[in-house]
Image 1 (tube, rainbow, N blue to C red):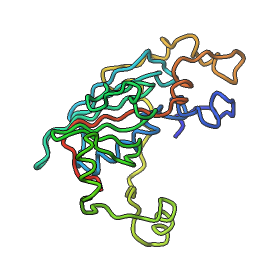
Image 2 (spheres, rainbow, N blue to C red):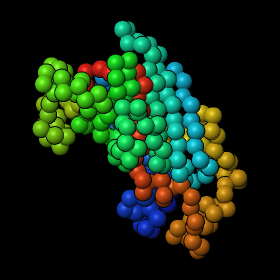
Image 3 (spheres, one colour):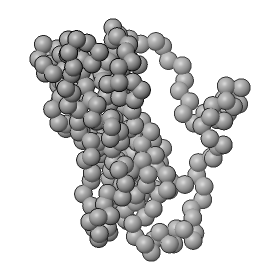
Image 4 (cartoon, one colour):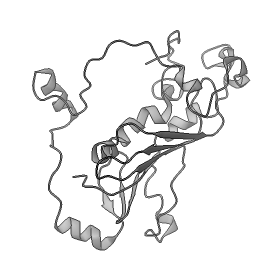
Length: 245
């Protein structure tokens, strides 16, 4: 959702993809992708709300997302599950290579993905939690030969699921109940957490309103455009490996 008062533009610095890196129109890589990539850990470990969040980033600008960020979420123990730490990384920041991966050229295994670290081993998966694989070859062979019981229902795909829900069928897995209308919370991106963004008056001159793309002068942007070109981060989930089937 665009920030109130943001002017729409089709300048290539925004459309068709890079708008995600501008606070006027998007939420950077975290808001664009984390809601999908963190989904597996929220479903599997029943995380709920974090008790602490620590945010680190490269230089902040008032109009664009930073080039790199690392955000650590702490979740308290719940039921039989111990405390869990979830780490989001973007901008080509990767978690340290696990000892199970002996070839330095084999890490990271992709430009985006997930790393799960538990008491009994480590697991890697695609950015959306697809194709999970244990790093211990013997354990991976065992679970392939004897897969765990299916835990979550399968569907014909998100589009078919959405159409069925529209027709009164089973609610979609991503169903969000209606909530009262609320005012936009754009300001939280500038003042939330320990990394408070500079006030409008302190904005870097290269990102000042009169120098943004589509205006009289060209803008040189650090972060916003380059960040979204990378698009994804590696999600590290530190806690017990659970059944994700």
